[in-house]
Image (cartoon, rainbow, N blue to C red; front, side, top):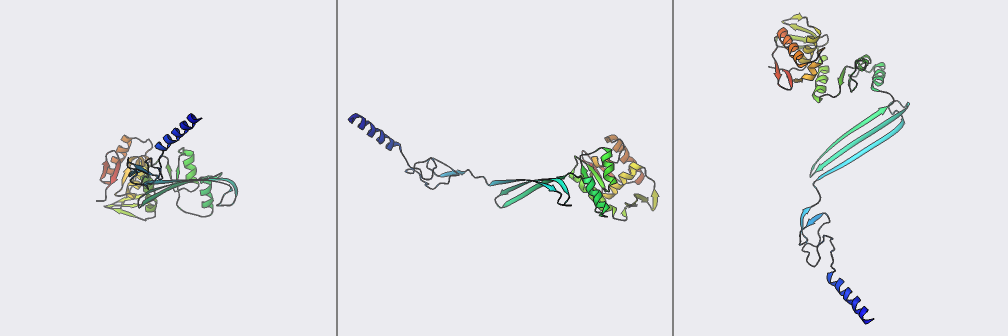
Length: 261
């Protein structure tokens, strides 16, 4: 019995020898901890003092939303309506930025929506942006009242150029050097004399005259061609230059520009 008691006492003494306290839970015994109030997010050295914070100055928030309704909020008609959204917030010190996107879908489509707007005498300029690139879809888009149709994928610059072109069409006349261009009927005058242009040249004229001083991506100009190719585009632009006498500069690997000077 005495032997058992002595054995238990010796075990307790051994435990006491190796026990320590660590109030700030940094892994360093309080007896030798020189920084006893370290944060849980601090990486400490052997003295218990912070040498690196595990908190990054970069912070992100992600917010995802999803909603379903059995009615279209625009018309209150009974229909399946799906809406989803994604928002990303980024913070760094005093700087923050937010990006968000959303998706909305009903059992109707953009063509039907635009047709209903046009039937209601709404003449708001409209540009379709769609992955449907077949001629039937494009034709339907213009039939219901679209002002333009952009095929996906597309360059953001292309959208800006096309929007700019629509604004230019509201301008009665564009004068440049000895040329005068009327966007409404795509009529070109050189030295006050009207010039007859073919379909391709007329399209090139409209794009260049509507975007004087802007670099035009080749893909935009390719839309003017019946059989698009780099060589066909060069031939068409050279012909346009011969007709008009304009200096159109080739920006290698990018596109073309009709400079303002």
